Length: 150
Image (cartoon, rainbow, N blue to C red; front, top):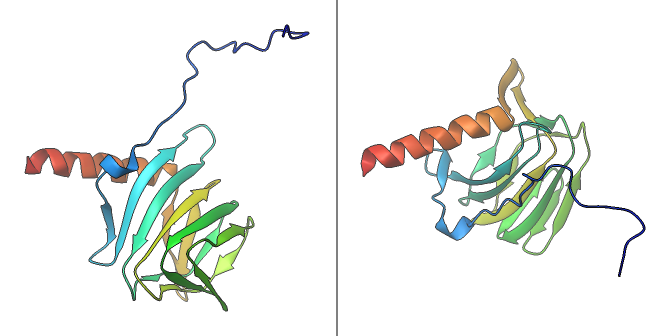
């Protein structure tokens, strides 16, 4: 079928991004309880996607989403505010959403897709920031550590 206009990409260098997560190593984010596989991030948009693995009892610090985020629970259970999310649940978190601590009630894995950074805090002030630059640094450090271990 002929289209009424040319819709071919102007940029001939556009490519899909494929992350073979089964071949990726987990990056430890919290000693012994928190792990991540960085699937993709965009310096242009700030968006990122990761698989998160939290051991039972892992607690994510209070944080604010500086953009919208989506999560799909693959296994386990998370306590998020007054709700419990379990395998098969999908969650949309609006830009500006503030969380207290988030707790893994069981060993848990979930897909997390975020449109931008997350800001961590406690009663004394800001304690951390997670955006695409930090993800890139984490990925580079993990790659360097793996190379040094080989």
